[in-house]
Image: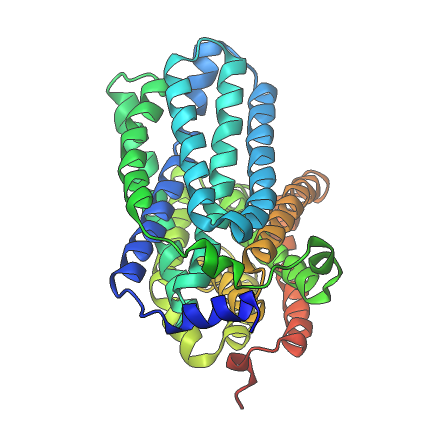
Amino acid sequence: MDDTVKTTAAIKQKPPDARLPWLLISVAFGSMVIFGFIENIKGAIIPSIQETFQVSYASIGVMLFLSSSGYLIATFVGGIAGDRVGQKWVIAAGYTFILIAAAGMLIASSFPVVVIMMFLIGLGFGCLEVGVNSLGARIFVRNSALMMNLTHFFYGVGSMAGPEYTARMLLGGRPFGQVYAFAGIVVLIVFTLLLVAKFPTAAERQAESKRALSDIFRDTKVWLFVGSLSLLVAVEIGTGNWLISYLKGAYGMDAEQGARYLSLFFLFFTLGRLFGGYIVERVGYLRTLIGFGIAVLVLDAGGFAIGVNGVILFSLTGFFISIMYPTYMAMIMKEFRTGTGSVMGFVITGVAAANMVINVIVGQTSDLLGVAAGFGSLMLFMLIALALMVLLNRRLTFTQEKRD
């Protein structure tokens, strides 16, 4: 019997630690709260950064671009690193980057320093994104879609708390550096939990086969995941970015009226993350995704057709859009039993890169043909995504989707 077989046999014979999954689940949920919390501080403090350093919107755009670049780098490298050194150290690296940036923001005396700190935060987000999702591949063996949707629900919890916290800090006269510094205390709490948590051992990781990057690149299924998920995320982000602009341009609504409908969108979105996983587990992964995608198309079409009295239909799409990203992560876990972290990192990186381009396309369409055409292009993205999902469904091998 060779060493790999011996190691695998030893792992199978080792009794499971009942406490291990719950501690790791706490790390996963807590990490997503932190992710959403810290990420949504950014938008609220941009005016404060502009006022402090007297910089243009173009300069802010460069800062956000570099932050996104840090995210892309970390998701790509972090996926590969997670399969080799373990998810614990990828997530730990994410927290380290964020804590360094939080401390750096406190003492930042120039705009270039702030830009560097934002780049580090982007690196931290990328590590958390791929680290937590690939950790889910290890601990959410049963009811994967349900648990991944719950994990991303906690991102929504953090996302709602972040802007409220930031607003209170700024109204209290705190500079933006202190906003990040005090948030670092919350990061330290979850970071400590991470450090004491017991993750899979090196022997357990070595017993699993790795997946070469060249194999991932040549796998048609991977590209179908990237293509369809990129378009689904474009619909999600595009609705959040362009709904208010569309309502203002098409119906003359002011920002406050539009914000109500956008808030409803995120309310339904959060409810979908909380409850949608149960539907996915009962109906099936891609069956639910295709059904929910059709529902989004019908609701968007109804919103356009009815006019101002049908605007609520755009908000309702949040429920159906909500499950798509986490359910895709669950499908990757089911389909790619080896090298899961590497595949996730590749897909997440591809989706993020594609959406940087898609956002530009939507903006250009809005400039050339009007904001209604730009917002309406989301329906085209969903239609193409549905076609790619049908192709993907024919290639999947995991048994969940093979039920009659």
